[in-house]
Length: 446
Image (cartoon, rainbow, N blue to C red; front, side):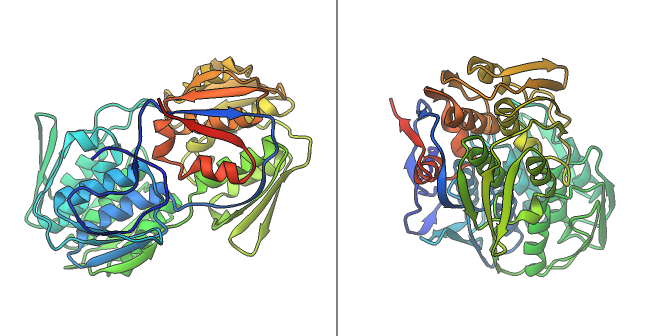
């Protein structure tokens, strides 16, 4: 199956194997933005990609039907759906951003390289498949542009649960009769590692304790879904999660939480264009630290009706220092976007990246647009210029591509962004949403 472009979902019934989930995307696509306009209006925030992917993997823990709603229409979601289809799942996608997964027909336990190489989160099927079916064969995911993301903690944790794991010919091969509970300390903290082991432990004999566990809202959302399937889990959202294994899990219906990274991206877009934007279907409790920083910087953010945020600038944006860190700290996935914010604000700032060692690749592209940013090891010094100028630029990863879109919206003149297929992995219908806010933006296909 080829990647898909973000478009409204069309109804598909009982799709075996490959999943039709939108239109084909050309990796040569570009986005053209004429900047300098003011964004105004209301847009909905999509479901969180980083909650959807583990939720889809978790369906492998039961042979009953599972229905997931508020699914974002993204390339990575398409990839995970295709992976489930190759395992033998029957998938029904509806017009309400929902998908039903029926795993009664699972008969293939291999996650092949052609899918895993395009999305490292494919490793998430290993824990649930091993726990439920006693076997899993997962291609090693390979390198990552923004830094090292080793899978050794996944392997060590599953071995601690009693799995027999071997590596060879580019694959991880895991077997077990039944997993057994264990105490596992995760160092360093890992989101996907926590999720993989959390899922595996739900069907293990005895009690599993995950120490130094990831605390991200997406981990909590996964735990809530598993609990609704019959799992016994305590402590999700803290650094210690305790799982009491059960014999089997049943089906459920679960709604994916809003995407906190998309939320902040659009808050920044409104602020740097001196706009006024209302974001619906979002949850501010996931965003305490970044919202505090943005308010300090002069962004007016008002909560409306519990799940809406109204955003505007006070007309005097000030650059802010910050350091990325695991939740509940400042998210690394917003670092690139905040560099654009600080470039458009007054004053100087120091931004330190502690999660990934190679996550400043967007800096050279922002410099092409006039940003005054200097790299010093794992930190950057940003001198706010209050002005960017349109230029041809190239996206290097998902969040870098979002930062270039933001820069293009604020810049004088035209910005042409190439390699925007990165953008389609994590932002649903971003051109349509920005058009609805008055942006001059269009996709160009060669």
